[in-house]
Image (tube, rainbow, N blue to C red; front, side, top):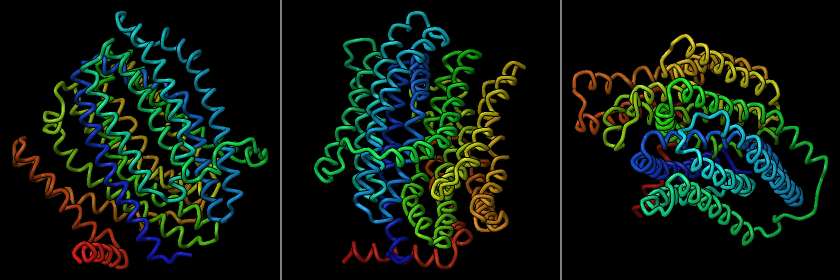
Length: 511
């Protein structure tokens, strides 16, 4: 069994791989969005994102199954049983093949009917939008089939290869966007073709790696009904939260489309692009630590597991905040540099949207903790109600004449209240006292956010918007956050480990 220092070093190494990959993917994503807006225009870009969000409705099964498969693969690895691992992986492949068939059937019937009859599309774009929808469905099918393979890489902590495939995925997305300039058909239709090609290539990469390095894990006729039922029951409760999140996203997109038009779908898509890029960085910490949390809890090392959970909560948030602070302060200048065509009210939408991952961040580590210990029924039920509550409130607000930005303000308020609800659920599920959680995680985070924002905020008050201010505020925010995180946010042991890891890396590089 690895000692704590070895485990921490490996987590830092894996997180570094994912951090570099995510930064690369974020750059590719920003460049891709910039070109897509220029190629499509605001309205067509809004249509593409609206249809893509509807397709995701039929992937809720895959999201919940992915969580279940990851957990059971990690448990199999923790037990050290190769036969159990093979059995779990084989069952997951069969289940995901069935899910893919469900996706295609549901999307080409119910989903297609919804697109044709309940989405406000310009009359001259209906035909191209339907073609794009068909390609998006089959592209998503390949993404679903890739999930068991990516879950295996993560469970085995083969993060280097996993990061490489994700980076290649992002690079392809950017390269294919530039191919739109050579499109022989309608841009929306050709974009669907390229997305399908991209998804199939990524699936081929995962499949080829498994065939070469773990041929025993390929699909076979072996089936274990009790284990499959366990995975499905676990997935059923996870599914509840996943489908509500997807419904929430689709409902807000449709309400924006019906009340304000497709241009505001483009605005929301742009804001979500920035939010997703920022929020993906702390997810690296959770991707790196989740296999260890599952293993530690299920092998009886509860105290070590809880300590690792606290570190995941803190440092994942710090990574997120370091990125979001300069984005929040300088979003206007960033938009002017980034986009050739800026959607209406994009600056306000992005600022408000950036608050959501900060307020909702605590959900994912707590949910992963609940999944690791196998107690997800209560947590996912309450979490689903929190998310679902946003839809009627936003609808009533729009009916009463509220502006489009309330589609972001209302969720932000909801997630602020949810922090305290989720803290109480954590106590019920794991026995961690609310005060212990607040003292170890929430209090340091609050103080650091308050103090570290002061220096760059003062600079923004006394300097006018400009690219010069942008290049001053970004490093100043990084320095300010780093100083307060090291001084206040870390324990003595954590500071010692970070400095020793950095020193060792420098010595290795030099000598």
